Length: 318
Image (cartoon, rainbow, N blue to C red; front, side, top):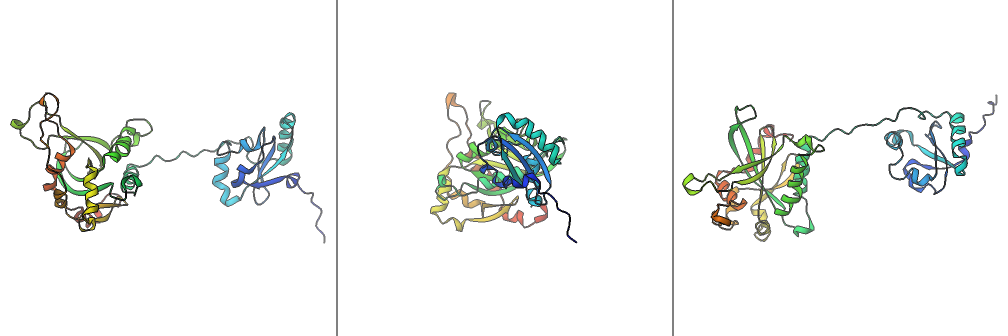
């Protein structure tokens, strides 16, 4: 038995292209309909310029449609018409096609705020990424770690694992400092409890310094009982590792899910550091402490980071 004749829908006569090719729409006024692979009409609208209406992500339904496009394979069907006809034509085709989304609520999905360990992973990735600015040599170096007892926010003693990461001055200012400043804004409030500043006088005794001493300030990124101390290291020192066959002294490890360059033995850095400058210098004979002083001070207390990585269950987000 021959099935009854079904008239072809008008939109099937219109020009069309995939939703993913929307930038190829013409620069003309017209009516459009978004239709899936099964022939279901999802949305009908008008535009004084079809190309501009769908350019980029400007269409208010684009986000909702694009999330389902892999499943539904949407096509944009369009019919040019004069500006004076747009309102009447849009109403006519909405009544005729009865699209599913017209006059329904536009669904939006708030992106989940990043987690602190994701920001730390991003920073470690950036400062270990090859860059032409550094001519192939290291941008940062994990020197080692030490353990320290200190009071937590509840004034209770707690053991902290402190990982010392040496970073070139350019990345320190433009990558790390920028992230720390972001934590003070509403956009970066999820980092507010992570970034901090560690002040130290490097264990100098009171007779050796006076009240005019300026403590050294070091950026720190905290995760639970883990503290990443991010300390500047002269770019020339990092370059020296390349000239002295850095593979003898360094290795690639995985820290917070990122591949980073680390010293096999912290003591190796001592040979590459220039002698510490005199502490007392500057205006009014103040004692000024610099990152180089901290490296000299901290190195004897550091343990190779590889020893810490052997206990995988202790690593956060490993």
